[in-house]
Length: 151
Image (cartoon, rainbow, N blue to C red; front, side):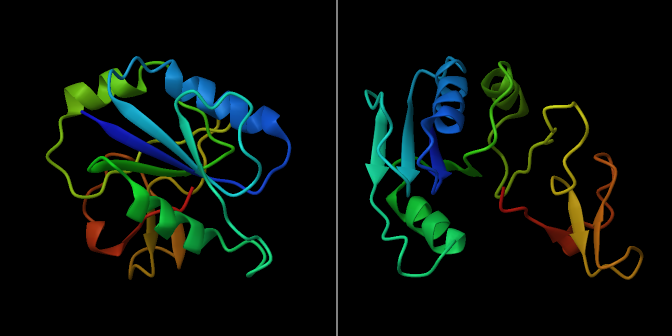
């Protein structure tokens, strides 16, 4: 499975971005690309393409950045993400075993503390749950109310 990893950023601090890029490189995916939009060009850009974004257009225009990343993607499997996420070492291997028979896929997301991030498997405006609610990963009964997180 080939992946485009599209990272939206506006940071001038390279540390979180470098950690993010390192985690992608460690996945052992034989064919991938890394696209970054916003912020400064990364220090090590051997396998990274940087897309300039004029931050003065509209402050924190993250949705536009993500659309540009999707349009620029070389591969059909596109991971659109914020720069404060990193990948677990077995992420790519797990995707290989999961397969590619999906249109939209959401991953479990955990904070650095190990706690679940509140936006990874979420219903929106469901008649059963409040307006925005994280549900159990095994619950597929509310998929028509699912909200795909922007993280």
